[in-house]
Length: 464
Image (cartoon, rainbow, N blue to C red):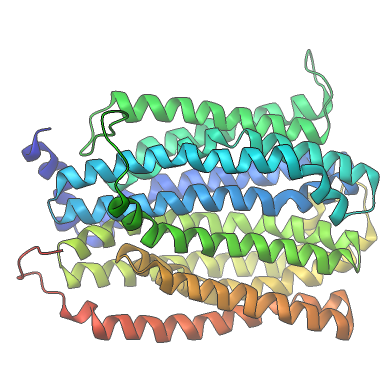
């Protein structure tokens, strides 16, 4: 590989003005994540046209989907962080091996979920709901997305490898083709339009997996046929424990952090399911709607992570902190816009998923959307603080914050509020837990700045 060419392609990470660099790096991921959010809404929109029970079935399985994405993206974050740090330190062969290890790990992660889908789909649904239709539909949906998770595992690994080199456009193309395919095939397979069979909730799962398959195919072409600063080696090497540890030093906390969200969702489904299955459906609607706000911020996160990782590896404190501050400003603006929308138009947002005109959906959902959306503003700080911790290889700082917010915060508060006042008070657990998390992230960031960031100096030799 031509190192001079590699250095030329990576120079912008250390030299381009930060504001322009963030926009250049982030807009493809933001657009990609926004399209993914649109797909999530469209998917649930079509499912809700079947029945409220169909929407509840998909909502019960949503934690499993979150868990799959957690493992795929968490491993990818570890790969991204390690590659970008090695490139920033000019350690090119180690960057190649990090990419190769990460790619191969995606296949091992898939095996775990395939086994879960084969043996646990129906027992899990039977535990969650007494309604036969919800159990059967949910079990079918879960089996398909878990056994077919190979495609998203491999695709996300390829995506994070490309992003770590500063290439954000190609991963965007992969995500878009998958989401668009999913959107097209959802109504065809759910309702049996034209030559396609009517498959109901199962059709939504098939459309999802088919879209992921096409994304994976395009991703492999771009990764192995294109010219990139890192090279993935499929054969001729053995796993090295040190590289796996380096990947999961950041990846494991990222996986756990996102898995915590899955556990939280699972726990909330149980709490709300004991009160009202309409409340479960409302939580599912919120999850889809808030993705329009959070997904662009996560796309921003994908853009700033390699910038911060590169400049941390290059020991450039000024650019590291400037990236964090400007990223936080953009995230806060996005979240503020989302808060205004949720406060002003909750009935219209719920109406997208309430084709039967259920008054219970409005009675429970309108106050729910207004209350939960109060967490948006403090969440912006937590997301960006997690990004800088991950970029520096300190993923466990992010993990503790997620544990504090979602397991120590949301679930216990929701359980207590449900006992005090039923559904109406449960929603306050979200903003209260986010405030707790913000306090933690502020203290943790101050600590890591004092012991490590302030000691970085661009004039020092690249020793990391």
